[in-house]
Length: 616
Image (cartoon, rainbow, N blue to C red; front, side, top):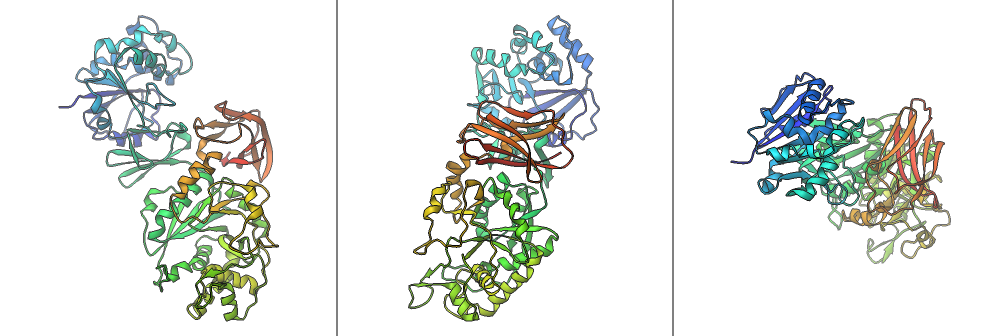
């Protein structure tokens, strides 16, 4: 027979909408009952182990006053949080049958609690979830102690009355109570048990509750504490509960890519970067299969299945029809979602923090796609034509069609902007492939890229994107572009090179998921993700509040904060010490309803390290 645990929550005021998600995770918890004392009626169907009792704020004040022999008036409903250390005494008549009692929060998705605490029951007087670096103390989110009179009344020995009389919430159980207990009693702090990033102290939004367990980043945790509630989105998906970061999306463009089942793992790197850095949605085409990712990813991702006939395999065992599928997808997507623009990205791409600034090129778009520039005018492939060591696939195709190659630099086709006016271009690519595939050795060796470059030359389409990517390294070094080359070919005289790190939008060229680990050690330490800050506008004040201690980050400490409207800077907060303070604000700020972009920029380098969108 296990040790029984009674967990207590006091909630004054209307229960929040997220309570239904929390309640689901309380079901069937072994040996644990939940006691909720509230002044509101609850019309939820309750699990057998959740017990709700009505109590008023006045009744609570009277009970506490009797216990401490001093008149207690709670300044507001939230002050009930400071009563947590007294729950074993305050509600002792309900808790007599329990071996351990304690407190917990309802802004949580509970995991398999008993499995986490059972190794320590009986051995320790106090048990709590904690973090060894940033929260090495009790957490009111989950704290239990042996149900003994001397432990239930320890709060009376401390500065409890003074704390209760403070107008603000002091978190008594996490401060004075925690400090006293840890030094004086056998205590177990269970580390790595919450949705907290170990290195940075960041609260992670993404979690899944399923089958009575809670997972964060594929690792089982004791509980998921969605502390930043306005920025957290909860949803039921079948028998699971999904927690995710609530983003603001704009619909001025959509990312587009496609994947086969064998490429799905690789695509996760691109997906992760879109989640970190973009306020736009992504359309993921799955080829000849339905992906389980559709049930795991947020609403930032739209899945669309496309079925095609299998084609011949190349010398690496790859399906030629799949490798040349990009123009078919582009022709389809402009009809799937009309009146917008699209950015194609290959699956071996990782966005940079400034990727959404691709919108600055929209005004250059005509009736053909704007495609990322290659560094060279021509590229050659080894061993694709018998008797030739190096051959140019584009020239092979041009010779077959009778076209000349004269538009430089070559286009990469790993990143392109288009809309419905470009549909003719994609249909012509498909026609070229269907007409000439397999007709000559080496033809379409670089797949849809050869067909795109052939059409660019046929129609003399000179306009393109400048070079916006950096290939096959996981950090940014602008000096690399002074000696950037592919094989023996020189850099194109017509190439527009990036002048500043902000001009780069993507990393490109990795075919291995381990690339993301390299990025974590290099580039990702030098920038901030969208969920690293909580962005709010309230009471005519614009707030940037950290969601982490920025542990492991490596950028300049002096930054400026900017607010933009319609791509124009409207407010700036200069020379701020980003590592020193937890929050930053501009007050007396009157903003009209609409969307605003916010950026954080290194003062010394003008490098953008953070971008996000807020809707006012």
